[in-house]
Amino acid sequence: MPVHEITDATDITQIKKEDKDSERVAVLVVESPPDLIGREFLADSVGIIGRSSNANIVIPEKSVSRKHAFYEFDPRLQKIFIKDLNSTNSTFVNGKKITSAYVNAGDRISLGKVVLRFDLRTRAEQNLREKIKKQAVYDLLTGILNRSALEQEIKKLIMNSENFCLIFIDLDNFKQINDTFGHQKGDELLKSFSSILKNSIRETDIAGRYGGDEIVLVLRKINSNIAKDIMNRIRENFRKHFSEYEKIGFNFSYGVSEFPKDAETMEELIMRADQRLYEDKKRRKK
Image (tube, rainbow, N blue to C red; front, side, top):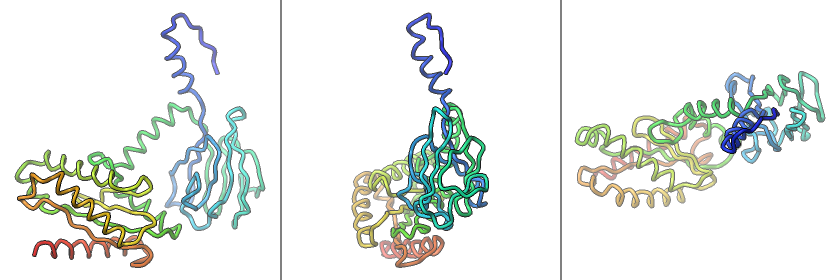
């Protein structure tokens, strides 16, 4: 790390920032298989790589063991120490099977069908990349996951055989809100509703914008009865928050599907929940 000449006490903060920005961080970049290419994982500490949702670096690929390998970044050596954890398909570095090894920048780590490239980046570069990635993952209006990121999270849970409930939500008479009050007001209400949903679930649960005024919640490790209780509480909160729009029928409908009880694929789960949403909408219009 460079030594700076300090001529003014006010320079210290800026120098510390520059030093921190120039620090190197370890990043693992997926090069294979095709459906995971481009995913990146920060690996500048200690942890486990595996398929399990409890791993520090979660790789949703069946050829990767639940706890496949241990890793630790050594900032002094600028290397990653990696150790196989008796995985089913072993761990390889640059094509050579290893029990444990130090990995240099540019080396490839193979875990089953997954190939990871070890990159070293400055923290400033990594922060910029993460900012761009966040913009690609989150819906700009609502702040919740966009559809692509949402679907990836659902597939990850299915891959790990973790039970969950998928809730498909659609706002009632949202077009009338836009026509009566304008699209800016519609955007404000959609953003506010998304915030209510996000604040009504746990940090481990998932909220994503599926499209337009359709939102999907994924509530982990609960059954459909509990999911319905949660949605009923959210509906009461909705009525209080948006009471001034009640006269034009502004509300929401929802449908619940449960994995693996109702279906075992994401497409089937969404279809079941969507069908039940319209049953709910039709029932409440009577």
